[in-house]
Image 1 (tube, rainbow, N blue to C red):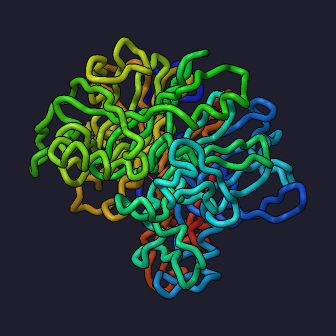
Image 2 (tube, rainbow, N blue to C red; image 1 turned 135 degrees about the horizontal axis):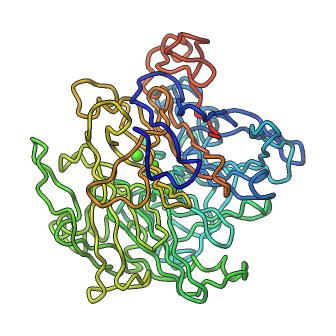
Length: 550
Ligand code: FEO
Ligand code: CA
Ligand code: CA
Ligand code: CA
């Protein structure tokens, strides 16, 4: 179970076996320390107390002093009424309960430093420390739909940011935060951020409905972690869909290209090609790059979706071609709904739909990698990692005459089944490459199927961090289990410091299926990180938190 392809010290580990323990487990020789978790205080230089948000997802490290001191930019995806205020009846929340939720999502920018003992610590107070929330941090719209009278539901400014799933960085030093399941907030069936509790309809988000309805969320947001006075931007040129993350290709003086997935069953893969060229070192110009350009959607041949019959036999090809269809301005506001309507449902299903694109990452050679997490509609239980290479490896290639080539590089599912760490992965979500080209994968098997012996996912046990060593052939790659997550959590936001001596991993939604009396610890299905359900140590509320593996 020991990877033989390990080209650097960091990835030379003895793989773990699957685990159902309420613990964060790493291989011998590594340590995992909680850096900061939900509710932990940190202060800006005015001494104002900030609180780390809930359900940490995307994380990126922005160096201040190389590998020893920097800023983490973190997304807080969605709230959990059960743990945060105990009122799980969305229709009858108080304004105070809505505010607790609104202030627990968004982003954190946290100044951190590595101590002499190699343990990372929060620097507080610090002028860099700040929070973006759903209602106290206005962001400005850019691009073709901003302040556009045809789309009065957008306007010029949004009251904040929410549903921030994964994200990305830019080569000019900003963070991109992706608003994903924005549809959950306004409806009474969801979080219920509606009148009469609120005096605004901003949180009511209609998919595919009239242009007049509020469309303040569902965008890619840009923030400058280094500049506490920076006003975040929401870029309408990048479309409005359930944005998972972004991954860029940039060459000096050429258009800047951003790849993105729309995380829903039968969602598509997109790319943005900027109008302005990327100019290294010219930051103020680069900060305008995402405001203008064209969006494209991937059309796959022969099938976008990896389909199985009910018995689990693969019905579709594992490789093919595809090309980029231009997205019109009219399609930007509800991108999935409008394109599907314009090309027709049958064409969409056959050639644009994929199996829920989560992270997209770009390899060293320019190849583009996508975690297609799963798709219950086509019996794809375990998902796959797909990669494609652009026509002549040109990131700006578009149209039917410039096709890309794709292949499913690694399929989820059971491999050796021996519990050696080579059992394979299921439901890949976030991806990251290290400098040696090893691919790191975190999984998101839903808590409803985790550890359920009647489900094919059961043998994977808890979610985990896997590594596929560089240089393996498509269809023959082995994934090694590097870390196990606590009960009912998913690992998110894996991100290396530049020296690769630290891997940050966020633990999102530990114990998420807890139910019963919210004030009773007997109701909690996880006690991580302050306790452990496995050892019955310190029964306490589970807390989403950021872990530093060193
Ligand atoms: Fe929030 Fe696509 O995961
Ligand atoms: Ca995700
Ligand atoms: Ca990633
Ligand atoms: Ca997921």
